[in-house]
Image 1 (cartoon, one colour):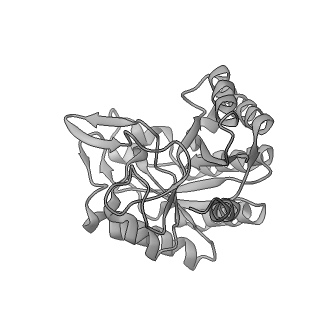
Image 2 (cartoon, rainbow, N blue to C red; image 1 turned 45 degrees about the vertical axis):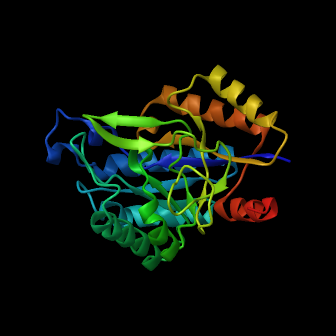
Length: 270
């Protein structure tokens, strides 16, 4: 019995989410993002170097984060015990959502996963933007070896402009094997769901302490994710909060890598 966390960072930047900016103005600034990701790498030491940076891809920017400057950072992360994953924001911001459209999701996931692999990296994980997910992409994740999904936020029900964006109502709050028909229930696919346990941006440190204490008291092997975003690292206050949150987590459990998570999942008999 143990409490295990996977520290995850979604590679998103503030401007991406702004409806007041033009598409050109919403695009990331390379030098600024390189600096913020350097801060991520430094922070990951608090988790023993074990973290996943989910590499952003969207209609706004497709292969921006496959440029040499970023690939060097992803390789540096892997060399120090970290990892990269695939993070698809397949949407027209707050207007249209394409996460269930396989004609769009297939090239988005494939191009990023294969782009990372062709650069010598080893992505094992996926997370949908806004925690979106459709069971239709499970075979796609399997085919690319993305056998850990981190899109689940148990109980989440997000609706925008009358459209269902993300639905995790009734989903388990501990790691489980995804069902091919319903991502909110255990099934027989090869992809395992690691639910969100701690959302640093949205929880107070007291709330994080209480969450970790509650997870510890479950008396079983638990694997959950801890979530931050690249844009969090632009604020010194948020950097302090992230460090404090990671220390709270370590007081109750341990940070693990994807390889370690898969081994523990095997031990759990899932």
